[in-house]
Image (tube, rainbow, N blue to C red; front, side, top):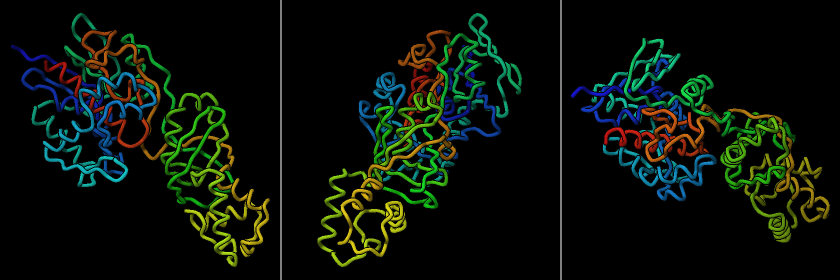
Length: 401
């Protein structure tokens, strides 16, 4: 019996992982990738180390990291979750490790290890990969798909669409009849010009809390001062959960920052205790909180408190101002910046149009959709890749059945 033909558009995480799991005795597979190299996002992820997944093995807990798609992914993760991802790579000779923050990386600390595992599997199956193959049109004629690309025109029995969320690729799937939820950026850092942060790039806070009162949003976690403003998990999480609302206000809003992540009363108590035990110290030389000396001096400067002032002579008003600047600091956000190279969007193919039992389209027979082209995204930490691996595996299992 002649093999059926599958075309995978998009040689990224979802497309390649699907190909690596397809049955070569049943299918001839062609991967069309518009860039000069496949798996480019995998290559740069995690600073070139590739944050493969996250050590969260309970699907109900795992879906909590996805601002969009959490309900739909529950059944998907029940069939293939981070433990299965680890198993898949490890049985192909890739040793993985779980770091202290539960992110999963290859022991080699090189994304190339992950890329090699997938490309080896695809070439062992003798599947064809064409790079610099920009797809310009897709048509469904009868049972067949006609795909026009810069690398030639091709026909297929099944089409797997894993292009990522570029406007062109969303337009292309729209021509097949799919509805698109307008994409907006997710996972971004906040641009802030504020004297509290000026010239303190690289200063980090392990347990910060940030809130956007206008959106009733708050998050906690590590935070970092950058050249542009604020970044780190606390900021990225709030940017992901409120991606659509922040786009609506054109990234102009107020945030409240608690650099210490403890309550105002606790901060006051720590200060009072320290003052009682060290009455002769100057305020500038006092190490009361888990912050750098440079940042402490900046807080004192903002609070108009002389560094050489004896701690025991601080007035109640001065103490109040210091505490406010530390844990109720109000800042104006005036824009956003992309987080490293890990550009993620909220938006894409409407979730109602996908069958999450197998990632097939409810609109077009023979079409499967996965990855960032769907209106699913996650916070940082390996979750976006996990969604790709799980969705891709489901598609392959359905086609292999």
